[in-house]
Amino acid sequence: MDNIARSVLRDKIKSLKATYFQDGLDKIFLVIYEDRFTRIKQKHDQGSDGIIDNNTIIAAYAPENYSLSDFKKKVGSDYKSYEENWIKTHPCWMVVTNLELLSSMQKYVDGLKSNSKTLCIEGIVELIRKQTWSKINLIFQSLDIPAHYLSNDVVGTVIEDLINVSDNETKIAPYQKPIYIEEKAEINLSDEEYDAFIDEYEEFLQLFSLMKNIIQNQEPKSIQALRTKIRNTFNSTKGEFSSRLNTTCEILASQKYNDDYYMYHMRAVLFYFFEQCLFGKRTSEEKRV
Image: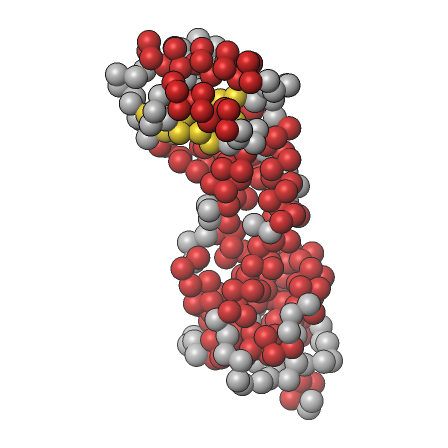
């Protein structure tokens, strides 16, 4: 995640207090751990605010106003309940807070259980950052964070990834004269595929201004290399245009192929360059240029 998305996420989590934090934490952990996380009802939880991997009990702490004495009271009470109800069957215990971790807090937790863990606000954000783009997107959605913060980030990442795997030697001059996408699509797609392709193109249009701004801020040689990489990859594929476009997207996504959110934006980038006539059959007007 870039600094803006990270900051927005951090502020959102920090704004959650008391039971709202536990509810938000449930949403985050359900996305990250899936069926490895067990939600616990907030009333009569017997000292557990959730279970990870069926062996780690969570104690959540997000007060309206922090004080060390309040921290000790809440966490100490949770640990006492944990000892009475969970420790024999669930040997691991972790305190999760949306505060910055102070040495006094860590010292108190260590005093309760020597091998316990503490996850603070920075740890939560970092844990989320390590997930796939699809999971990060689900977390942003579950926390009601506007989609544009993440889409801006992932588009930049896709373009950066393409630049990083591109060859900087071969140059392809960018096509300067725009054409209507319908004309380009007509000569590359079957009648059955045309409408769906145009619908998809119109959906991606909202991202094109962002892509243009990101690309304009890159080194010219990097953009030339990116264009070459995309065109050469497409030209190396076989079959009909739609199949070749799908294959190109999969090849360029590499190990992130199974990340649907990343793949969506990779495909959007390819549509952007298709509009610029970087690959595919050329119109008669293109051939004259």
